[in-house]
Image (cartoon, rainbow, N blue to C red; front, side, top):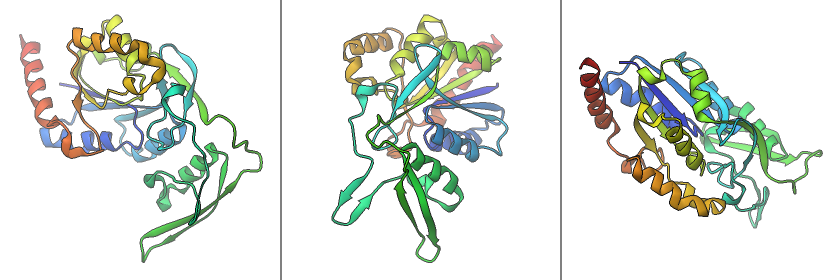
Length: 274
């Protein structure tokens, strides 16, 4: 049976790599298509490079939203928490000063020599310039110098404009075999879970997802959605939506995804034969 894997909120793509290149081979899944949706342009570009050799993987620079069209993506200090909801992330200083000097942290996966072009673009998104990069291969350390972009306004709101998509519209246009396939969803979209689940329930798509995994509980972190929290939890409960833990953060706490997928595949195949 054909398997579709949807990764909403790719970031570095580590969960997708683990699913496609570790779990799938372990359970004998070779016929698949994978769709990654990442709102941040720098991270989506990075992931395209990571999966460029796999023709079964397609990466989209978009954000799950309540409608199609441009939407603001507000940056988080820890990079992982970028969100379409402004209230989720507190304001922060791009430049950190300490006794040790001036610091600007970047995601570790961008700081390797082969990803310098992504690192440069990352700094540029914050109004900074990567002026110098060098690698100490003996000590296995990398060093880089960052300076102000003379054209940058560092007090400007830290966000980017990205492409907002309503998932029910997007999947109809991009995944022809969605309703006939075994569909696995990984979701970690920093509060937009609210509009996503509401959308797939209202458009009768929930029944086509066989497994939902990831984090999926970020709605409660968004103050502007506080009045929607009870509605969101009620929606999950009434429709029996179970989100299995699957994350590259503290992976030892993850659900046994290989076992879960095998069992649900077995059941679906039986029902398909009937």
